[in-house]
Image 1: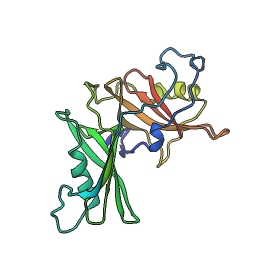
Image 2: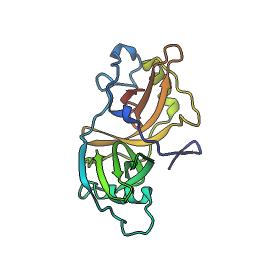
Image 3: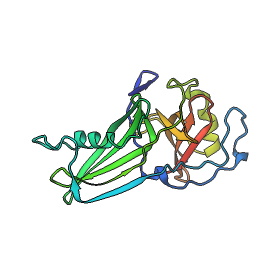
Length: 220
């Protein structure tokens, strides 16, 4: 977990919408030079690998008497990390059992900080065998500093003006620190959601914690 202003920040996995297209925002929406866009605001789509095991494959920890979805999925997903990845790990996000399938969602971490666009899903049968998985883990050439250089107060007004939406803190919308990989660089970003109460338009926003650039804004 990371902390901002004394609050514990939960690891929050970007939803499937993190791979969806977003509505571009014109540069003219920004009047303040301290906040800049990398062109139009677009989401990042990392390369994902999908593999299916028709007969099921034994999973790590399969010899244990009782199957544990969290432990088994983390153990399996760890084997999918890129070779020689620096400080790499895997964190369990959520899981469910439905119609004979045990499914887990996971996220790659770097020194325990989640990498928001490096995710995986692993499916098991009821015998605890891996039947399929999707993986979009990454191995960036550069990881930026894990300590933010700016505070949210220094960029929130500009972000809200750029997107014509407002950030409202709540138990389900706490600002978190996560890595966001773009152009083979992992930038430490503030992640939060903004919404226009009149139109209902909402975005998940990723703001560079050093430059205050909007790295991505994903339509929700």
